[in-house]
Length: 170
Picture 1 (spheres, rainbow, N blue to C red):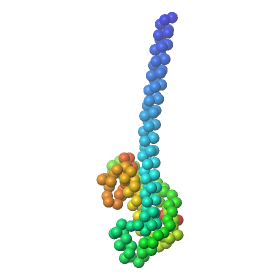
Picture 2: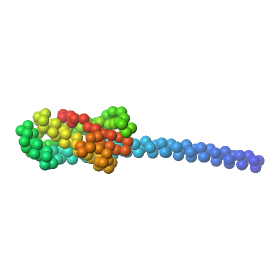
Picture 3: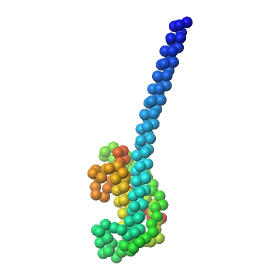
Picture 4: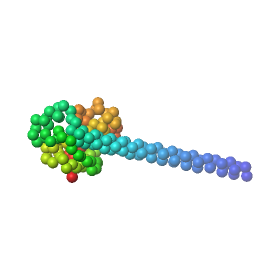
């Protein structure tokens, strides 16, 4: 009778160890998935912040000196030197495979609207400024400024590389 009690205690311990092991493995796998999702969420939040920074600088006609000088000389872009209203409608993402560093490539596409941005030249200039700020914001969020170019193209996080498509004006 005493032997039976020992066996039952030993079996409960083995079952408990198996249960704890299974729970630990599940927790580790789940944590890895959560970390990946969090990195992508941080990048998308940074992209949104960058897009709003881009429309703010464009909307208030605040540009770096080089851009200001270029817009002043180009008759088709002089209207950019005035204040304007620009809205971000949405930011979409599409997977584009892996890059040379085995990071997942993601292309971001920003959809914007503005009654004040009318010509093709204006839309390209404003869109380029929005995309630049999107990539810059992502790069700053992940402290990866030193591994990209001066246009922050592509923008890198630990597991992803981000590029931007031309802004879609709706």
